[in-house]
Image (cartoon, rainbow over all chains, first blue to last red; front, top):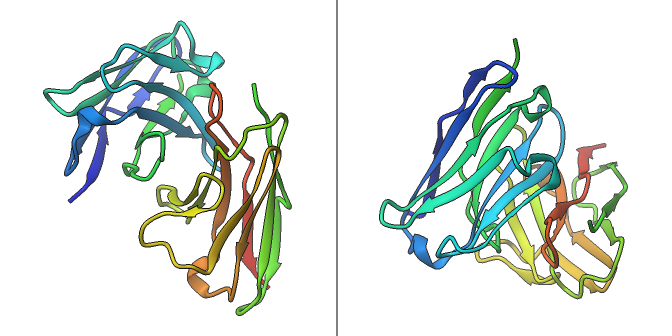
Length: 115
Length: 107
């Protein structure tokens, strides 16, 4: 079965860090761009970052540049998002998705930034 | 950044109705446009890519059209399972951007 499973979310204080993981199965992970997309409670979708198949190209939305780092391990079929200097406005459900078709999504992992 | 503007932001429709949602890009994006459906508590589901190509397994009641800056998603014969929020997304340039969403509710 083709699927993506996120993990690593939780409650963190402002200024803190979290590392999200996304485990892929059922498809050739190394053949696809991958993305992180987030959704704040009751709000719309916001693309956060993407990464090329070999990890050589990474793109970010301006609001996370310099704070978040996307990476991948093709041998482990895993995608990561290292989130530093977290802010209240980063509170959201974080999805990983197979790009660029966005045809496969995980179930999401919740990140709450609050003191 | 390319801004994506969806309209309406919400609509009420009856079972069996045909509805059309529009999405306008702030600059030309050729046909690099996708549509997604999201139900409460669920991940988004891809419906259409390249403006008019149906994803595998998506029923033909969904159709997309447009190119450049103006796009539409049409849903025919609304059924209970179609009541959801719909988003457009451009993937012409980075950052990728989504429209604000259109909530389709039962009248």
